[in-house]
Length: 322
Image 1: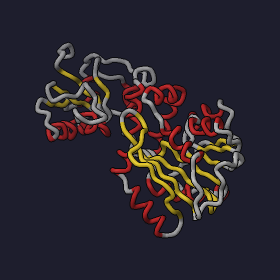
Image 2: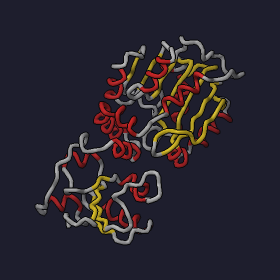
Image 3: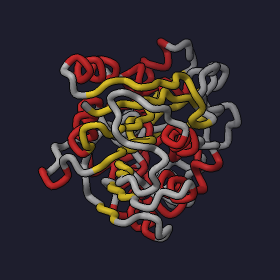
């Protein structure tokens, strides 16, 4: 049925699996982690390949994931759903046609962003995705109208005076940390605003390599996992800490907020974005409330349900460190 226009094969495997083994010709890649979002016809993340009017054939590597996913789609109102019981490996072993996949070239910007959202926090998976994505990251997120860096940097530039904050946002010599700097989109804007003492860290060495090309950071450090406790040398170092686009599904979890507090000087400021999808799914609010109750931070400002990308908005938070 490969030439049947009403039949859609859905590959549920990860990008690394597709790159290693190929896929069924014409199959649409929808990672299992985002299937529910992609299947919701009226949702922000709907993939047009998925529709209740079509015949949907799911497959994974050996059939386990696809069997469960088929039941999930049925629960969502899809009635013409099946799966390949032996999975892609059974398909391949039977000598059926296979299409080679170039993981970097074959994936659109929107698709790779969906892949990023489907991560489960496994460090190796995060590193592998950004290793392949780094050189095209800026173009892909621009295509999706990623406005978070502009909004979050403006929150510092336009910040009012607060009793618990000792920094002056007009001071262009503030020591600023861009935590999860990626390719340097926030650092680039801070530099344009006239700030000169900008530092960055990120988990992905390839993303840091892209940020180095901008020549706007005093220091850049790769291989820093914000889900792990920071070494003491990072503590109480920065007047301002940004964390933009980092608290998102499968990347950094709410307890990492404590790492941002640790690296920021008392009287300093932390600015964070949280995708709404992430905020609704993770206990971020509970973590924030706990840290406020413990007297570690105070909430100076929140900007809720504000622009982020074309596929969803974000909340933005400004904290004072006590």
